[in-house]
Image 1: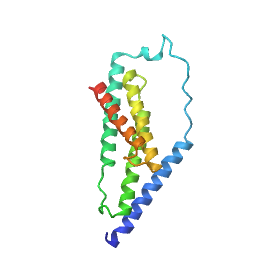
Image 2: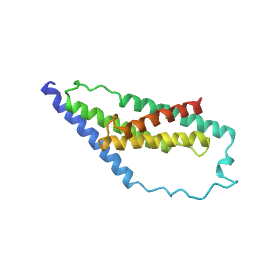
Image 3: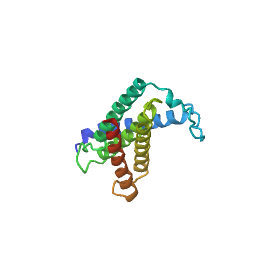
Image 4: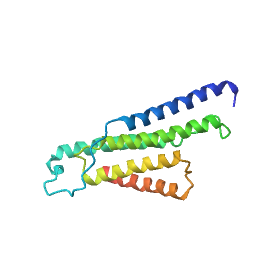
Length: 169
């Protein structure tokens, strides 16, 4: 790697680190949402009050959001290392970007589930989002894609992805 690219890559790694720290701080400091009740849903569940149009719009919205997240995660978890396999800083930058895509994608999906979203679809999207967060957290902790538990998480993501595709069709 040429020496003149080192400051640029160091700057990129620093920027990604600052963004990750800022997002973590924001997540820790934002007001907590009230915990979900453990009470079973009653026959007068709030979900039954949505019109067919509201449900259709919510489905379209979450399917569009899901597609954006899927594309972002796919793109950012498959980036080539700019300087090749010997580019340590480039490798770190690509890995940091992949983790950000996983975390941000999971959070973005969870934040965009509308109450009118059909239950089965909302559950599948929630499951996928939480799986992205788990993959990202474990990657941050050093898990490699070839580690058995991480491989299982990735297989689960593929299976849930297929479920969401089916539900969005």
